[in-house]
Length: 222
Ligand SMILES: Cc1cc2nc3c(=O)[nH]c(=O)nc-3n(C[C@H](O)[C@H](O)[C@H](O)COP(=O)(O)O)c2cc1C
Image 1 (cartoon, rainbow, N blue to C red):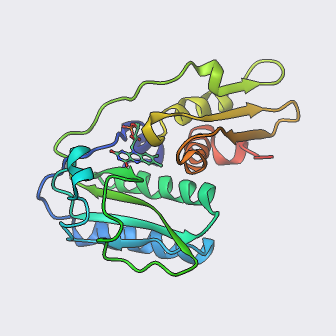
Image 2 (spheres, helix red, strand yellow; image 1 turned 120 degrees about the vertical axis):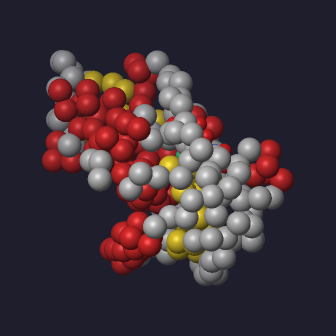
Image 3 (cartoon, helix red, strand yellow; image 1 turned 30 degrees about the vertical axis):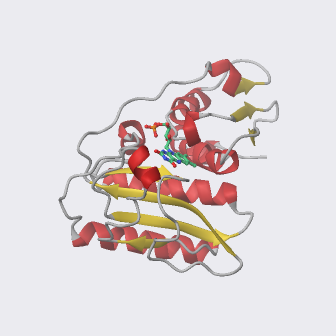
């Protein structure tokens, strides 16, 4: 199994999938991680295998999704956007490290067709489709680094530079990259999201990647 950092570097959104079934062992690993996240974070993520009908509405067709049969429904109480993003990315990197591909989706699937249960006080945030991609995807474009990251004083330490490199590779909705990470004078990091669709979920995703690149032990969020 590849490391989490290797998974992060090789991950791209993939929208076309082969017919190959996902092995039982991989499903079990994902189920166990989802159960752990749900318990520790009080979320309600649900994994669905072998449902060909949820990513095939016209939007999915429009977005050119084919062969999707497996997905994780990202469900939880309201106002958990940043946590939801953070733990979604953790799962996306686990999927990649198991040799599979994925795509986080806010709109390219039918939430009403998904074989899941959403409580009255809950929100269906995202769907993460996964499986064996026809291709591995491509690098996305990045905004100028200086618009996304800032160091309040002095030179950026090596760990911060590695965090920047990993955060730049994070998936964001419409590749909008509406975030800013600042290394403060006191050594703590500040992460903020700007206005945009899903930008708070994006922020959680970016923070997860930043920690993987920088080393969790170096990052103290303010
Ligand atoms: C919160 C979120 C929602 C997304 N929703 C969709 C979607 O509805 N349809 C889609 O095709 N891609 C969706 N994406 C994938 C992004 O378009 C993709 O991550 C971005 O273009 C960067 O490309 P990359 O993931 O290959 O690095 C979403 C990504 C995120 C993080």
